[in-house]
Image (cartoon, rainbow over all chains, first blue to last red; front, side, top):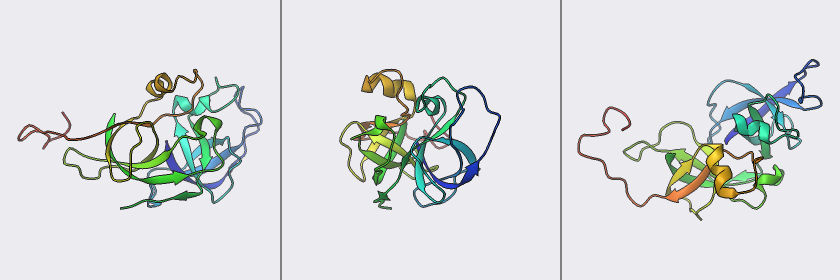
Length: 89
Length: 99
């Protein structure tokens, strides 16, 4: 899993079966120092996250497993909203 | 698996039910000399690791599902599965990449 900051929402009227009604958010993946670690990505939201939230995501096949039904074409899912971190560097 | 250092705990109240009552940590991947390499990421803990510990982190979901035995629908990909006591490198090895 990895950290990210929610930057915005994605609206797509026509989607693959299984994605109907799923909220899509634009997320910037970051490390624990809030440094970007790659390009923006669209992720499906399972925890009612909102813009500006620090979240953690799961990628690849496990992203689909966060959804019901789970056999859907997604490769990034927001699975938690981070309340705090105590990182020692 | 990756060799990582536990950087610190992370709290989340709103999370997928599969993460309920599982400790979450930020972990930093290490190279063969114990130096930071690459971006930190988030893992659940299965071995009571502590902050600063060098740990083994499984980064693949099927192994995690086998360990947790919660069925086939577990959206977890990374898990701390061991605490590293020592790493021995053969002399000269590891200079040019990973063995």
